[in-house]
Length: 477
Image 1: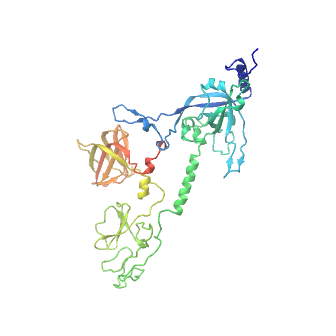
Image 2: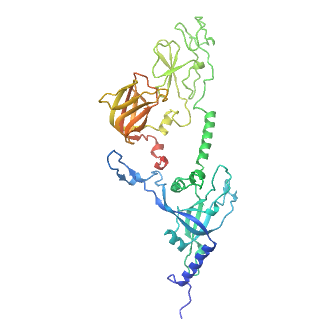
């Protein structure tokens, strides 16, 4: 008589009997969940050829990696079908853990158990890391935020999966699959789910709009920046409120009312006669004190060329210098006073420091020019027969002084346009007008000025800074 043994090398009737009983326990005492099946990362094929009339070619390799620094693809693809299964899990209390540095909630991690064979029969494989599970029974019908129009759905992400220790029967075969769950957050990995599912029956908002804390973080950040700009609006030191006395030729203080002691001639604060020997007050110098404003609040004009008939003592700010430069006319020449080195500390278009231009480089390289044309600004304007310009509309008050140029060049999204007015580069906005390249200019154009433009076939970012060179492609979404 053979020895009695519950274990068999093969799964016999004892195993099947036990497995059916365990499956029935899930049917009787389990609860439904909805599973979003993880299918893998989204293919990051790069379209390298977008020339009109040509076929696009796909390239893989390094161009198919979103983040070259961490060598990862963050976008995930999920099955469009939703699988319903039974699970058993223990609901935990959200207790505060004060034993660590800070305040932590201990109930945000859950462990759920599934019947192994039923799971494989339903989804075709075992639940794995990356799968997303919705727990309908945890839906919150009474959120504290009254502005949320729907009941909050609860989504969890599978962080770990393995056989459950309690799932081994007397036959030594496993019957249960245990997964570790953590709450889903609004991150790039799950955009394929939360951006495509409505938050509720009576709203068009997606789950991402309801679950995300992005807007709150942006509001907090903007409030911090606003307060910082109020406390420290610019770099360096502000000396504009400091009044300095005029100086006589011998270095002694002059008359604060503008009265020259040597010539007894009354001189205004911003205009000095040729017979005056009084030198205007010098601004206090220090680390980054130059703000390109005259001392003692004197009047100033600005532009890209000096005025034709200056008066001795006039101040003028040249805007074509980077940084802008302040000059004063002494009767023979325009003398440099200072450069505007005080700039806004917040990165952006208004920050023109070299550091900002390097770190936040928005310039582009233009190559392979297609066409060039020059327009003598007039209204109305009639292009010549051999012109590359189809039409030009000079801006007016009704259009906000926005001028529009439509070219004869076929439009492609990879093209770029560079523009100049009287040989000075200006910005433009390219668009598609009836299949042709067009662009608008927000700068006011004077009649008689020469507007030049060049259309280029290829436009790429300069990427001269380390921050842009290492910027993940995934962050451009």
